[in-house]
Image (cartoon, rainbow, N blue to C red):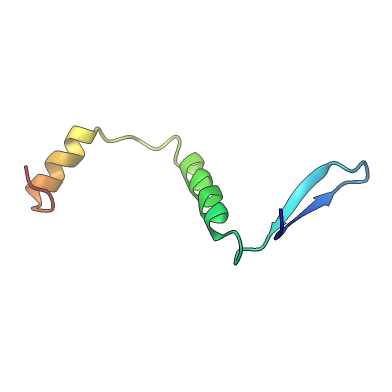
Length: 63
């Protein structure tokens, strides 16, 4: 795959990657989404029905 280089350790195992963001912006956005999602894994969740009700009450969504 062009635009991606791998860094290897002394045994030839891939340990890191250098990604050309001009060529692979979508790939980086996917990686970033995964990292954000994992960082928020333990945050308190809000039920969908409450979110909808709040949006309707604020006039941002039609009921």
